[in-house]
Image (cartoon, rainbow, N blue to C red; front, side, top):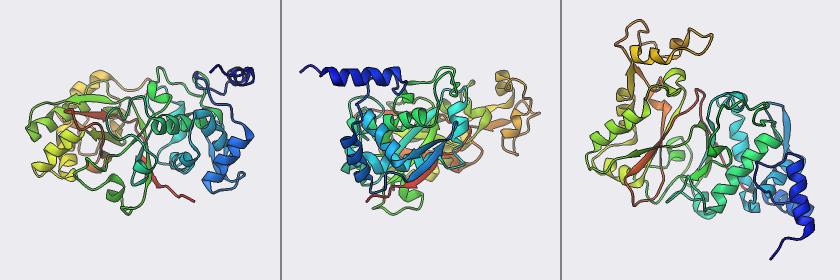
Length: 345
């Protein structure tokens, strides 16, 4: 059925006003926005954050407007609000993330019972298209960062390239296929809690491994994590590994715990100082090696630099379809991830 002239005019008006991400948005009618505010369990005027870089005020009402525009359902509001709150954690450094020339963009990983309740995809194609919750929750957050925070590409946002996650970057952690405790439990929350973890991530880097030797798989994964040109090797910060169910099962059945995997990757995802110097310091910055751990001798070309400073800076999730021997590595930007519990009305 063709759209009415009023709707198409509204969509075009929002294009003209610069309120879209380049794709059409749903016109935020007053009735629809009111429904979303009600679903949040908060007042319309409540201030959730003043978003950098321009300090725009993200009230519940303005968040609701962007959630409607993104195509969300009202019940997604607590997840979106929690993601915005998590992004304001000082360790995440939202201003730097949104204004840098780097390719990274905020990734949201939802953990806990709410993943199934809201039908957030944690299985086949979880980083891809075709799932309303993933697509629209992630898109709502990105619209908020642009429309309220002012992170407009080429203006405040100086990303040289960006990547498709700038449209939407949201997945669920798999509970069904996870042989270990959920990530949010690992971080001290209760099993029945639901959380949002935010991380300034590049696009997923695929790791294919079809054999059945756990240590060999981890060696392949470690090698993928530390190529020359990977900003992670120079600025440290947090980094993320999303294990596919087949690889997680392979490791768990061989007796590997998450901590064992982290320790192995920290010890083996390394490159010599001499090789890393070929990447050169940032323009005008000859102190890049100061980011490296103190146990690295920057004057010894044979000394090995790890992909992160500390073992616990490697974060491991389980997601993806159970029918393929693939995992992904997501390099960071130098700042930290943040996790926050979802408070629901």
